[in-house]
Image (tube, rainbow, N blue to C red; front, side, top):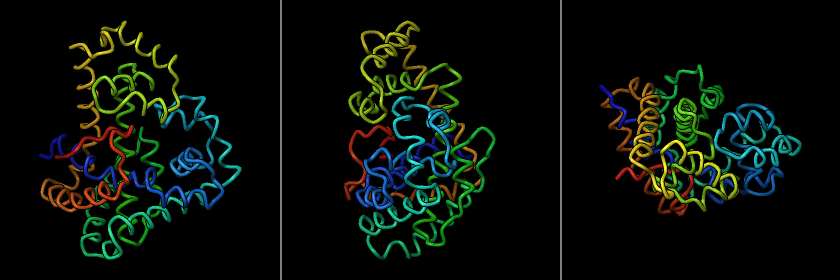
Length: 287
């Protein structure tokens, strides 16, 4: 039986390829070509585009861990610059250019890319939509015919599926967006400085979250207590479990083959400088 560890491993292997859309220069250039000036305007428009021209409230709810005021400075204003269809086209154009740089011109049309796309398509088709708004929105997008872009689209659906489940695990325990970041930093998965800059919280909100979590017995002196460490582990365990369905549909043998195919892809993205060390996503090194 495919285990939750498989879900974590495949997320760790595939996340850097998805994250080209955030960190690759080509993706920022593609956003700017539509008139979206500045990193965050491009980020919110392209990630939220599958949802349609939604307002700040919907983006805050579905993205979960951004400061509401940070979102509202960009959304819905981005839709006055670009419509969702153009944002979707821009994100694929940026990924196309980024992949050709970091993996070379041959990989996009290679047998390995086609095999990877085929395996991921099976997993992405198995996502269960209820309660998974970002996964559902991406699952509703057409899969591009080019294998390397099909890989990206399926990985995006699967990582948003995982993220929707992660949000549910946080919500069940009453952990706020800011609190989730405090716990992640205390667990050593990423740094406070990254998270403040990349998620829009300020020192006041961060310190308030620290105080709230300390009051629950999960932090002491800014460090995780035994109970806090257990909570972090439980959230991650639930996240893996809730992400498992598509990988069970793929099955152990095909999951293992997918891991073999994604390993070199991940290494190429990292070597190409498109996966910043200590970034706020917090995906582990698969080893």
